[in-house]
Length: 132
Image (cartoon, rainbow, N blue to C red; front, side, top):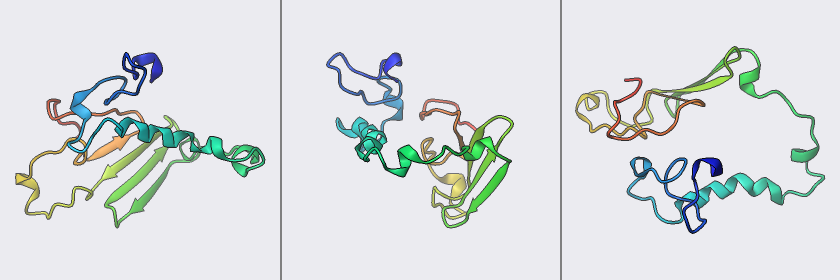
């Protein structure tokens, strides 16, 4: 992300994706929003003898056999495929619309997508809807 312009001229994280990207902002986004990325560094606070650092590395779920995991309460199906190393999330309910409302509801490209994967990036209301 740093190589692609994620920092502003002042050296702080910008609002967006690989640098400023207004299309991915939410109405609740604010100047501190990018700093949620700092949670990725919390493991650095663990002591050197913690299992995070000492345990034998295991294969990631996408590096093994193909799998599917249903999460009915959330309306998700998570799928991994070893041949391409992808993880896909099939969304069948997180938008919380009743069936008779779906055809007339406003589209929300950040929450109403039918699928997400480890190879897809953000979209915006101005983009052609994907995977609909």
